Image (cartoon, rainbow, N blue to C red; front, side, top):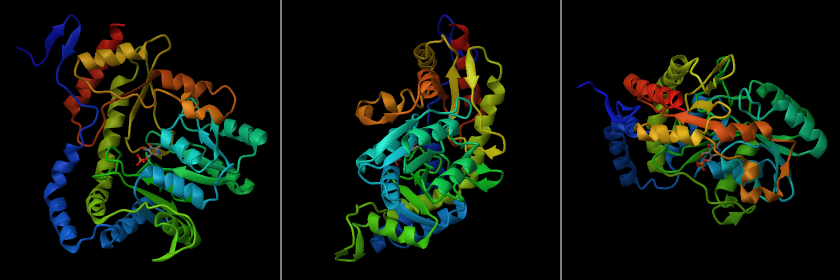
Length: 387
Ligand SMILES: Cc1ncc(COP(=O)(O)O)c(C=O)c1O
């Protein structure tokens, strides 16, 4: 009997492939991490400590940023980063209408007013022309640029220049862009304040929730460190109202091992993302997205949409029947979420709405094998042929 067997007419199942399998990486690090954890335990390095300091240094070197402050998760990183940049109740903050909800939530938790901007339908990042039009209409004081899907806007330099000229506080949400380079330069180099998430499924992920904030000045670093630590100026003196958002030694020890392998992780994921694009090029009823010219992606996601008129749920049902994992990043825009009733919506938001209706992702993780990639690609083609 051949490798594949037929479950039902037209349904070929060669192997099951999960959407994500973190164990491909963690298995290979287990003994060294456990040894490190044992040392952390013996030294009771539970909040802060030398391993957190070492991680902050390693992140500066890896990401080309000046200063790093580790914190509890990527959402806190956004809230605290925005607060440090002056966002408060009533501040209008421009954000893309398609992103992870945390971008919206961070603005709202500070009492800010999200100004929702459409995406560019080619690169899927916030649209610069829409951003400029929105500024004319709403004069926002802050903005969050999200480097989504493992690449960034080809207009990044223009966004930074415009914001600097108009005194708009620009935070760059880098939760999905670890290792991305533009013309060889790390994407967050040159940002004023940037953030990342170490949610375990990220390209560089932790063993529990985690995050970091990046800053380009000593004054910002000092303020952010204080905000992450109850607004402290000394142990029992509080200069401001802050948060408790800190990292401990167990997480830092784990992350130091992942960061040491980030080059290998990114290269492996990038190879798989490129493999899919080559293998699926020309597939009927499928649109394939790629990073803009001059950018090295990090392989965070394999990004597709199904063509107009194709029901994406029929496609995901077909993948499920064949044992193939899938994602839909993202199935809904910010403006469609109930709390967004109070947000400012700019223009028609048509491109973000259209993308979300048809978004589809195939499995992509460190260590995915070529036979697994082939199983995913051929299953998708079989499903699309049958529609
Ligand atoms: C773009 C973006 N921003 C923010 C976050 C929030 O990070 P966390 O889950 O660590 O709070 C995430 C991921 O989860 C994200 O993808």
